[in-house]
Length: 474
Image: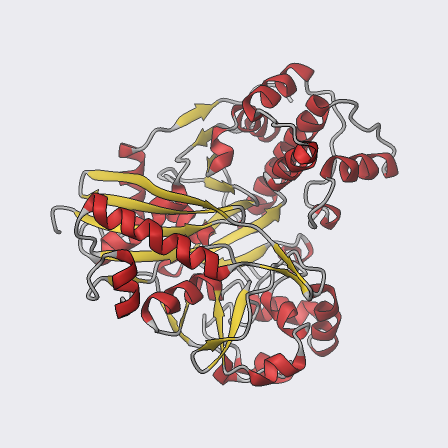
C-alpha cells in the first residue's frame, strides 16, 4: 500500500457541479473544493437540455486550479446523475444531451411497453419504473438523429470522452439505462434487438477502478496537467459513489443519498427481482465491486429547492437556514403528501403543485411558507422511513440504522424527523459522500487504500464528521 495519493473528482449534480481534490492514504481522507459552478436545464426549441460544453469548460477550469494548488495529480474521476446521454457520429456530438425532466419521455414509455411488457422488462433490467429511464428516452428519440448516431455516451462517460477521447460505458451508470442485464451486467442484446437499437451504439463496459485513458493534448494545455494524467473509472453514477463512502459498518445499515433526489435503500449481494419488489417499484442498480443498490427514488430536496426558486422569482432572496428554523417551529401537525408522486417531477411552481395535490386528496393546503417547508420535510421523512421499511422487508435485511449522506445530512430537521418516522437512529454524514466515494475508488486503484468496500467505509467513519439522531415521537 502506498503512503498517500492525490486525485481529483469531477462531481456533477443536477443543480451544480464541483471539482474536488482528494488526499487519500491508509489513515488519511481529506477533500478540498477547488471549483463550484451552476448546472441546470437549458430550454431550447426542441425541449430541455443540459449544457455539457459549459460543464466541460467549468470542469477544466477547476482542474487547472487543482493543479496549481495541489501539484501532481495521479488521477481524475467523473461522476454525475444517471440516465441522460449524448449521441455521437464519429467524433462529433449530435447536440446537447436532453434533460431527464423534458416531457418527451412520455411517448417512449408506451412504445417500449408495447414491445416488452413492464413485468418482463423488470425481470431483465431490475429497474423501477421511471418515465425518464434511458430506454424510454431512446424510444422517444428523433429517428433521423438516432439513425445518424453510431455511439451513445452517458453524461459522465461523455465528459471522460472529452478529456481522453476514449468511448466507454461505466457499469454502475450503465445499469440505470434499462439496457443492461440485471443478472449478467452486460448489454442485453436481445432486448436491444426487440426495441430496434443496434448493439454497436453502446460502448464497451468498464468497471470502477479501471483506467479509461490519459489526457488529450488540448485538455492538458487547458488544465496545466501533464498528458500522462490518468482518467479512472469510478462509480460514475453519483449514488454509486455516495454509497461507497456511506459508513455502513454495522449489520443492518440502510442508506439515503439525499440531494436533488432521495435514493433510499440497502446494499445487497444480488438483485431482488420478486413480483413484490416490482410492485413496490424498487430498483436494482449496479454498485461498486458488483454489489447491488436495492433502492427506491423519492423526490428529495428538489421539492424544497424548486419551492425556493418559485418564491425568489420576484427578486426576493430566501435564507434557507431561517426558513428551516421557522418550519421547525410550526410543529408536525401539517398535511403530508406523497413525495414519490410524478406530479412533482417537472420544474414549476412547487408550492402551488403541493397545494393542488393536498386539496385533491381532501387535505388542507399549507397557509405560509414555513408550513409549506414543514409539509415538505414531513412528507420526505415519512417517504424515507417507508422506503427503508419496504427495502428491509423485500430484501430480508432488517434495517437497524439509517445513514443519510449528501446535502440532506445538513438538514437537522429532516434527519430528526426521518429518525422519528422510522423509529431508528439516523447517522448523518458525510455531506460530501459522492466526492469521497469518487476519490476513494481512484485511490484504491493507485494502491493507497484497503482493497475492500468495508475498509474504505471504515476509513470514512474514522476521518469524517458524523452526527447521530435518536428516534423520538412521530
